[in-house]
Image (cartoon, rainbow, N blue to C red):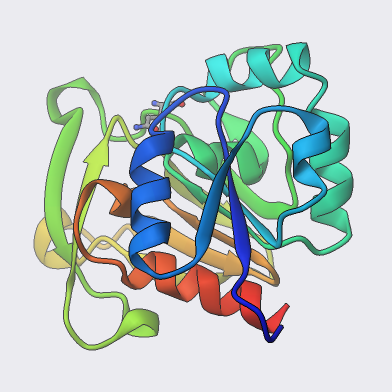
Length: 204
Ligand code: GLN
C-alpha cells in the first residue's frame, strides 16, 4: 500500500476517542465506524476496550456482525484491545449466554480473568515484537487468553516475576491479520502497538 492507510475504529461503545488519538499520532487517518456502509472505505479496523457484552448487543442491533465477519474472513486487518480482544475471539469463557463475537482469532478469551481485587493494574511488559524496551501495560477488568490454537503467535505473557507461579498468562497475540491485547495501549502515550498494527495494515 503506497498511500497512507485509513483505519476505522468501531464506535458503538468503548474508548473510541483514545484509539483515534493514538492512530492520528502515528500519522494515519482514523475514522469512527458505526454503520455497515462505513466499513467499505477502511484499510484496517480497531475494536476498542469497553464492555464486550454491550458491544455485542449493539453490534447485533446495528447489523454489524455479518459485514464484520465477512471482512475478517476476507483478510481485513483488525486489532482488538481488551473488550476488543474478546470480540475477536472464536470462543469466550464467562461470557453472557447470548454474547456474540466477530471471531477469527483461534483463542479462548476468559472475561474478567484477574478477579475483583485486582480489577485494574499496570505492569511493565516485555513485548519483543515491538522492541527491547518494556511496554507499560494498563489492564482494566481485563480478559486473559486462556488457550490458543496452533496458528496463534504469543506476543506477550505476564512475567513470572509478577505472577510468582509458572502458569502462562497470555495477554497479547497475533494470528494472520489479527492482533489482540488484553491491555489498553490507547490510554498510554506508547504508540508501538498501534504502530505494529499499522505495519500489518500496510503489508496486508
Ligand atoms: N471486562 C470487559 C468485558 O468483558 C472488558 C474490559 C475492558 O475493555 N477494559 O468486556
